[in-house]
Image 1 (cartoon, rainbow, N blue to C red):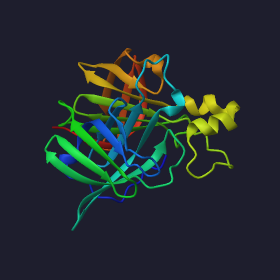
Image 2: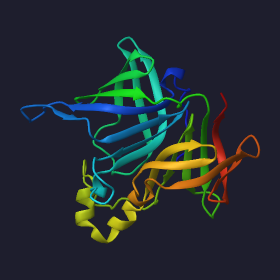
Image 3: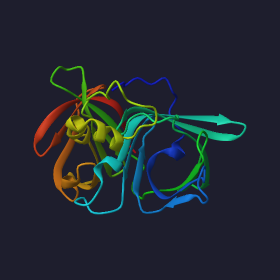
Length: 256
């Protein structure tokens, strides 16, 4: 995962955790637009970094795991005469790369209600900011045994914590443009379990206890873990999960 960023921090009014209330996808070749207000979608935004998790409705037992979505990376906001344009530069993606970059025009109806309109695709989304999701922002990169590869990322906004743990399994050479994970899993069933082992988890972190609300690993949902963070220097930190400390690099550490 590439941890570099040349973009300035996003404006403060973008930061926090945003819950999607509705998605409308334009008709394209259909007679009517598609409206989705049942998929669980949360986007966590710090000053530079973001993480996003999208889980279809249904229990963890009945859920189509290949239909889940999630990604993490750096965010770029540009002020233009037409308004604010936001680009999510994905450094990691649960799904294969899409046909279009992730770019939207942003309009704040209130400080906590945001309308996103697709810049390259026909869609619009309604977002609302969660309470208790501003103030403290932390982004930690956890390294693997080799000390170089990124084994995972931890992102905190207020009292909400996300963990992103990619598999680092490459997409196949025969990946077709616009192909999703479900299609890949059908063509490469022997690799499907590796791709699906990626973890993106979201939950409340309060009084040293992290309660996972949604995760690409459904068995984790509802579980609670003792979790602590410790800053050891300007660029060094450690995070403990269930009593085991892990070394991490500080990408952001902002106190309220």
